[in-house]
Length: 442
Image (cartoon, one colour):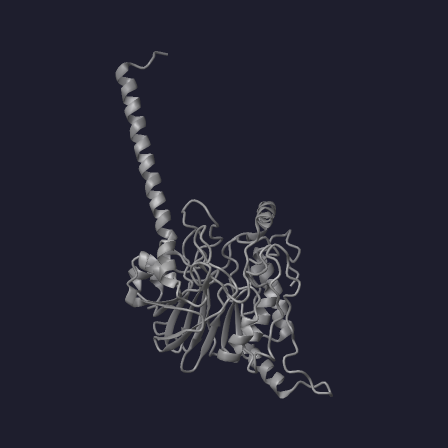
């Protein structure tokens, strides 16, 4: 084989250089996209939020610690996650339907798009909660948890969205490309916890369409009163931890109400929220991505049902509390269990009037489980959260709905128990792995 002529060698070198330049430019563009998706400069955020009474020691802190696992536990959790990674994936295609949405928002309806993303209709206003329509919950297009099913619909297909409500800035709840698409198609008003306004402005949202609130602050938008409520979690879009606030939301219209907890571990604050702002017609509570390695950060399914009961209590906080203690982040908190004797009982064993009323409030509030099915973020089996929450809700007498992805539920069409029975089909069974211990054991 002949050796390359001088001109040939020069051509090869020129082509190699051109490829290197293109590759370098591509890497730079990818880096810039990643930095853009991460959001605002942490130093800028701190300067804007440090006057909050909940901002201490250069981070937001709640009365109840929400600690990430320590280094030893992080290593153990990573190894365990690698070992059981397949558990969190469905088998086959996840059932979904294309949303059929009225042009005018209804009195009370919910359409679940996957994970926490939900379109709510409350007294004629339309709210989009934690919009995440991207393929990965990560600042990168190439790495990070990937969507397990397509979204049942697109942002551009929705009728006008009045309000976007965001709970915190983790990537599975705040997605830069989705915000960009909302700005292109809807230009809604955004209501967010403190600090998230900096991310939104960095992505081009005008400041006059953003309202940022601290815990227990409220605002009126689109005829609704929106109250920022406490949660037991954390925040952050990189190595910086908890320099933006995390929260849940109480939503009150003239006639109907709803509550979204955001991400949270079990907390006494649910009882406070119930005493001050409840009861609610609808609750959206997270049931997935729990694990003993991070017991402070996410509710287990049974704890989600307990939270539903707490926020729907109508007596005092003293009479309705959730047992809880701080514990250590890399150990399971054995004390996180519900106390179910809020009002006491009469000597003859009958519930007091207060307890009967509280039970009635919880039984007439519909619970929609969210924060599962869409991303593999923990080590439990994919369908396990739904099996557990159904059992817990049935035992507690809580009306629970389990619509397919994209299925609109009008909660004004019938009584809560009828609505729950209508949306009770266990559609996730056909997607459960045969190795799952609970497979077809409903």
